[in-house]
Amino acid sequence: MVDLVRIFFRWLFNSVAAASFVLCVVALALWARSYRVADAIQAGYWNYRPMPSYPTYRCGDMMVLLHRRGSWTVSLASRNCVAGRGFDRVGPGPKHERIVLLQPTDAHWPEQERIAYGYEKIPTGGHLGFQFNVVCASNGIVRAKVARFPDVAVFILTALLPICWCSTANRRRHRHMAGHCPTCGYDLRATPERCPECGNIPTKT
Image 1 (cartoon, rainbow, N blue to C red):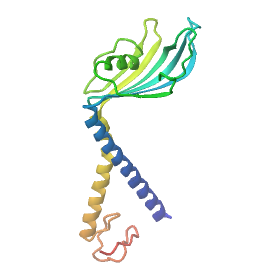
Image 2: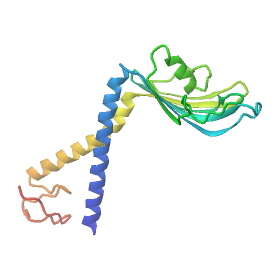
Image 3: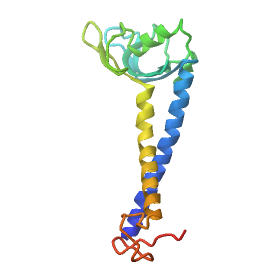
Image 4: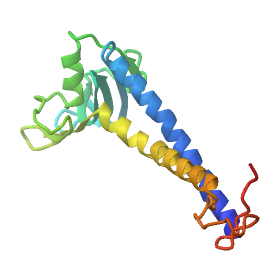
């Protein structure tokens, strides 16, 4: 039973590490792409409803994802006026699509940032490329919650598990070559057929 649990957790770790490695490669490719092409994703509108003070207009919540020049911006813009008098619009796209994929040029990028920040003035500041803002309107209503972070952070985060996997595999290989149990590191020179510490049977090479 203990061996089955150990095998399961090892398989789980290897699977998660492999998925993390794929994400790391994708993050690296997107980082290189971000210096050539900007990407924007607008998804919504949720909680589509009449505006409190102007019932003939409708507002909604929208998620915005921006990627440009090595930086990600993730925003949840709330209570945006999304439909005017006599016009219903249930999605951010021109044909009422719920999800819109865009590649804005430098000239249109400020407009995408204004959408992400709830049509308010874009705050500045942050440290090492990280930024988190809660943007409020003049009456105190929260217009957007915005987080900005660099591609380097995504790359490092997704590279941690593959690095741990490589380190563990390398340590096991050295243990096996040195006559030690690859599972627990016990010296097997006296008992090469079976590890007396954990019961593991070493693979013949």
